Length: 444
Ligand code: PMP
Image 1 (cartoon, rainbow, N blue to C red):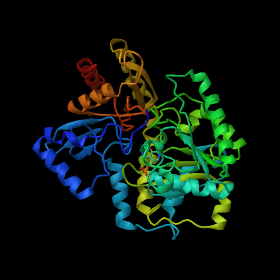
Image 2: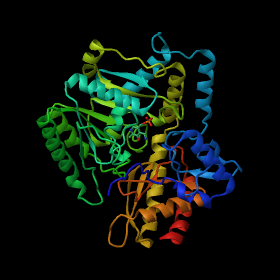
Image 3: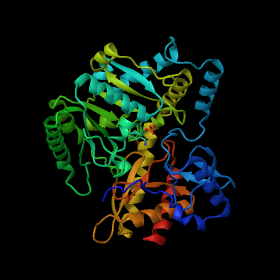
Image 4: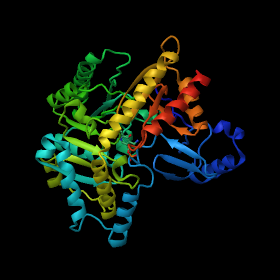
């Protein structure tokens, strides 16, 4: 079962509006009237947030929620260092990339070595405002350099909201058209397959799909994957992308590592998710956590790969790479490094995973616990082992009622998605685990 038309995992169902508190009903009606029908809200009872601080969110009545979901603020909500950097730069200058400015150069210089491989040896960075734009640009470049247009992604991938990126984002549902030049391969489902076979399985699928694309006259421009396979259900077996990258390169395509989810220390192991796979991508795309809430995103790319595109056309993005965006990004990078967040992600992530493993024997509905660092998936199953979306929904909403925020993911909507800010503490982990234990006991 893959995502039906327009459906989003953990979406609020408008049919249940009548059961909500009057003020929430009123706010949802107003939102629908003004914003229209394409947006989705989370939870059976949507949360009306009014402010955030660190790992906490607060609603209009001042109730506190533990945020175990938001990766857009890796340093926590309203981090003073980012606020200060953005404010100072906004008071000084905010303009675009057609002037020489130090901030963007300092940032690219600080970032490029982090990618290792060919990008660190001779690479460039380019800046956008969103992850969608970054993936869109990556594919324009890949198509230009290869002269082909085919794209291979994973079965339930999400890579963005532009026309091009939506065309290789199958998780948007079966009424959102995929490009005729798009092919899908299975995600590395370590729960249903022997992890030792996953890389070979995916590489074989890439070879088969690349052949199909050739037969149709499209050819393979690029393969793209999120190294933690977030919308595919969160899979974290290391090294599986290594044979895939080899197959992609043998077919003459580019390997695009989408680090919008898995980058910036999220895995607690390496700064970038692709590094857990021992690969050397041609293009790395990044976004979400990069500015701790300020919209900043971009790509890092092997210099040779960009050369022809740079010669034959040009790139300008009015807001991408503006001085304020760069100030936010620099503050985030410095803080992740200076506060050694990668280590605390590893430690707190291990605490959560160990706590979940301790709970699992008491709850048969927990089929699998997986992930890396502070990106953890808990797969809920029925007694026969089939996916249990209803159980996942009850748990997500039970936690929300207890003011702990997570969500769910996967093609069957049955995988709890725990993805807190990187600054999540041991005390936060304890609160998440003890609340989850209570909710599990009451619901499954
Ligand atoms: N790639 C991945 C893996 C994502 O998760 C997302 C956003 N959820 C995007 C790309 C698109 O990023 P944005 O919403 O900033 O356009």
